[in-house]
Every structure is written in C-alpha cells, then in structure tokens.
Image (cartoon, rainbow, N blue to C red; front, side):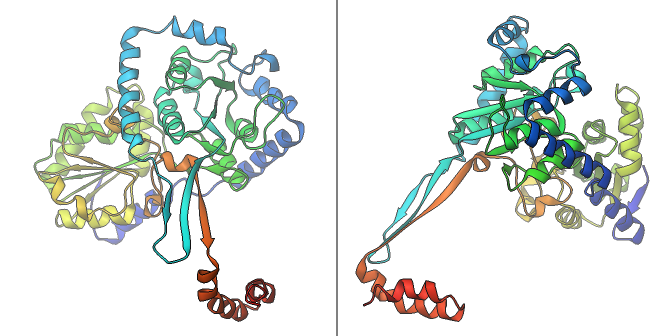
Length: 432
C-alpha cells in the first residue's frame, strides 16, 4: 500500500474511489431483481420454490420451506456447549445495550386546553434476512442476534427469518440454535431477492412483514431498495469498511490486523489508515505483508487493499478526525494515546472503537451495540440498526373548545395562504 499525503490531489482521488465504490447498481442487475420481485408478487409460492430449486436446493419441496420443530430439535442436539456459552454471552450483552433504546409514550398538557403526545407501538411483523454464509459452512449467527434482539425488545410479535438453504435443503444447526435462543421460531429456507419479495408481499406460505432488516449480497440490497416504501427497511448497506486513526503510540501489529479484519470480507471492502506518524505508516505496511500471508482469505484481502485500501499521512490527529468526518466510515477505530479527548469531535461514523484493545470484531460479535451499520458515507445521515427500526410513532392531539377558539384564526389564515378553502372552512364552521 502506498502512503499518500493528505490533503493532495492524489489522496483525494483515492478517497473518492473508496467513497463511491459499490453505491451505483448495475442496471441489468436492477432489471433482473425487479423481474424476480414481480414474479413472486404475482405467482407466490410457485415462483419461490422455482428460484430455490434453481439456485440453492434442487430437491426442496414447498412443504419443507419452513424449518420444522424436528429440525430445530436436531440442531440443538448437534452444537457444542462452548458455542452455546459464547452465544449466550453475546445475546445477554446485545440485549442489555438495546434495552436502553426503548421509547416511552408521552403526553404533554403544558399549553392550556390541549393534550398532545406520542404513542410508540411496535410493527406487527418483522422480516430478518440472514445470509447463508458460504453455502451454510460459515453461518452468520451474529446477524441473527443483531437483527432479532432489537425487534423482540421493540415488542414485535411476529418475527420471520429467511436464510438460504444448503444444497440438501437444510439450514446450518448453529444458525437454528441462534434463532431459537433469541425467540425466532419461524424460519423459511429462502435467499436472495426472492426472499425479500416474499417478506415484502407475502405468499401462501410466507406472511407479509412490515419491516425488513439484515445484511445481504447485491441482489438482496437491490431488492430491499426496490421494496422500500411498500415495507420499511433498515438501510441500503454497501461493502464493509474500517478507518483506523493511529498516532506514534499505536501498535502496528494491532493496526494491521484490524485493517485486514475488514479487507478479508470482500474485494469491495475498504480498509484505511490515517496517521500523523510516517514511522507508524511504514511499520503497519510491514505488518500487513507478514499477516496477510497467514489468512485463508488472503487473495480477497489483498485485492481489497489494492483496490480500496489507503494510508493517509496527515499533519496531526485533528486533521485525521476532520478527514474521518468527511468519509463518515462504517467503523472508526482510534489507536491513539488519548482517544476520549477526541470523541466529542467525531460527528460522522457508524460506530467508534476506542483504544488499542477494542478491535472492530468486539462490536461485530459481543460488545452489545448493533453491527448493522451505515456504509459508503451514509453515516452522515443514518444510524445503526436499533429498536427504533421496529417501532412506529403516532401523534396524539386534543383541543378543548376554548383552546380551539384561541387558535382558530391563525389556522384559517395559514390555510387561506395555501389556498386550501376546505381546510379553512373546517375551522370556520366551528366558530359559528
């Protein structure tokens, strides 16, 4: 990786390449996904099983689309207890964090003669998408926890999970154990765009949901974007990314390891180092070359670093924070001697990891905050998946006659300016 001085034209060009990667969708892919959505909307189960048989499990029948109680029981008998303990710890800590996000309905009577307020209600049904993970060989159990737990805490009564089946029509037992632990009882063996279509429109077998959450590939992402408005979605997520700010106190081995932890995700993933120390920059490059050779996904990591990695040399840590706020990264790590002194200056980031012993995987799995985070600069205006994604806010308004009479003329005046005679008349008629 080349060290670039920031600000400079070369550095800015690299930053633009990183920020703009994976945002635009290929028009052919969009058309294909739209056709799939329309097919499922029109033909329901018959379309679903056709896609499942064609792309995932050739012999799966529609009757086996829903995971059975026997499959759950078999899964629980075939996982090791150490995994169960780790899963329980993660679930407890994720639940504890998200419980603090619960909203309370409120009523205000401060203005004489009026009662105003908000009522918070959960959506009736939530759909959770969980990627299959290398054909089921690497089950993404953390995504089950991160999506289902806030939905449960919000009070959603019906949570449907979808995940692609393996070739033999099964779901990885670790995935099923994670789902059962957090109270997800209904799982359908569906993946890709047709799974999103089923959750958005409903079929004879799959009930329609109100909100869809969870990460997925490009086809899942496009499908979520296209059904947004028909249902609520968590976000349009792009490839994963990390930005590490490091000073001369940073351990180069730790920093390199954290950059690689994102680079191994995907050739489109981005790992960026911003530092005010040329010595740190050089030491991290050396550590990267050593560590990358030991990775099972080293080819993916190397491609990611070559295409979307960067090392930026800045004048000081304040300049590094300014750059981070411009990029608005999904994950921001502070490998600096006094990280809390700079926390108040960070405005745009999905999650901030403070200090040398808080690598990004702590947030992925067990710390408690949600790992479904805004990417591609969208942390400028959006936030992590939370309980809020699964609730609705309803306004409450009551006027006494005296309060109404006191404000009626102002309402009429505003309605008249907007040319809405019927609006004005609905007030005037009450003044007679």
